[in-house]
Length: 117
Image (cartoon, rainbow, N blue to C red; front, side, top):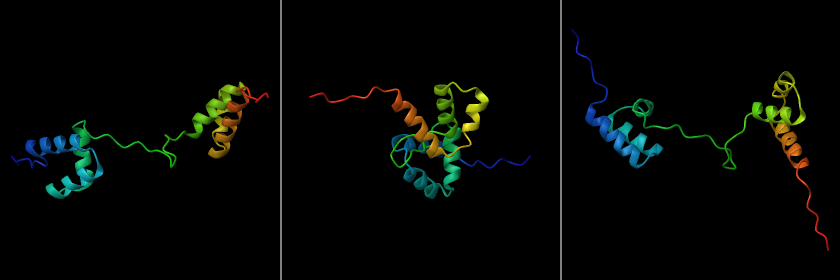
């Protein structure tokens, strides 16, 4: 019987988890990849299997979570009373146009405030 090669020893795994929990940054992953002679993907995969690594959430340049076209299309469809098929066809439109339409509809529902002197 052929002995199985251990990719990560229990000690390596414990050290990796402890260090990552203390500083969950890309630099930590890269440092451990160099220290253990592994590639970054291997370290990330190990941390993921151990339930420690969490993928960084993508944010826009403005620091906001991006909204997909389907969300805009659904929101517009609901506000305009469109059936599901019509609303889903909106998702084929340009994302910036959908965002502008959704913002316009939202703004139309807000009462305007006028300064009275």
